Image (cartoon, rainbow, N blue to C red):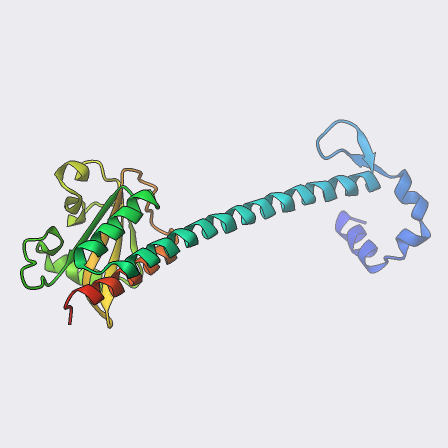
Length: 220
């Protein structure tokens, strides 16, 4: 009989272990980590311990993710409360900048809106944005995360900061379905905003900022 046939026989005849129970205690197999031989029972115990360690590691990882999400949720709540209290355009910008820098440790924040209100054209948030970038923002089903290469958005952070930006997050701002602007988040860390990362909280940030800006500016 080959090993496959032996294995199949034992699976089909589980009573074998009842009829030859003493055989199990006499069979020895190599230790999984080398060295001496051990009984089948001891080998099973080692396998269970290894499995238990793996499960404990997985549980610790899941707990870590849960705690991290709780912390981010608390930060989003603080930002939400603050942005609701902001009564003017400048207050909304200040609130976003403060919380993103101090609470979320995002060093660079910039915002551009397509259509300036009356007497607002000179503000940096209303500097002209290319039609290509506006079209790109319109196509964003979710925030973009990745390199700044090929984007004009790096210049939004200022000439000096733009030299050091290695990754960015771009969030479209929408009001009633139409795109009216974009938030840019920048970092010197190339892995801070990377392709394929989760963007749920960035999307929520965009929704909160869009609602706040729509409240303090005539965007219709």
